[in-house]
Length: 185
Image 1 (cartoon, rainbow, N blue to C red):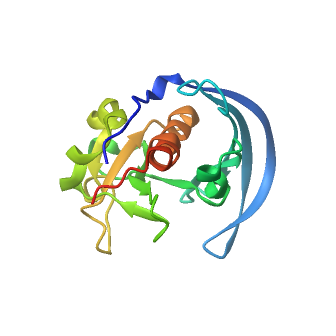
Image 2: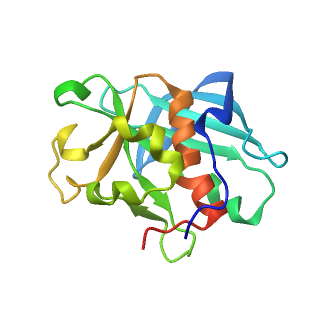
């Protein structure tokens, strides 16, 4: 389905809030680290555009950084997003080393699954708001060794500690996809 609205990543403004030590679970394992709060306004909408996000930064060097909304605007389409997150891992290969990456996994507006992982050959089918990210997209196998079958998955690289870019990726892959009912099928 074609997008009805032209979303822009730079219209998402982010202000840092409280930072505190925290513990949480990831994949059934206990994780400790820091939880950083952010107040976020999506300027692509004139109302119902205020969000609160948290970024969970693990103490362990090999841990995954997690980005998730704590609160969402009161719209049914976004109600379950507090149960969704983007996770970022350190890239370890080539020119990507030192940056973080996350898989491009779009939310599924049909409700039949939680996400749709985008493969490298599907890059051109992404909605137009991904255009500014094209230069930072890679195949997962080019940024980190993989043992599974996800080597052809599309990932986006972000600079280390660029939480604003990570939150904007959440909007690109989850929020706007659900609002517009975007599917790649």
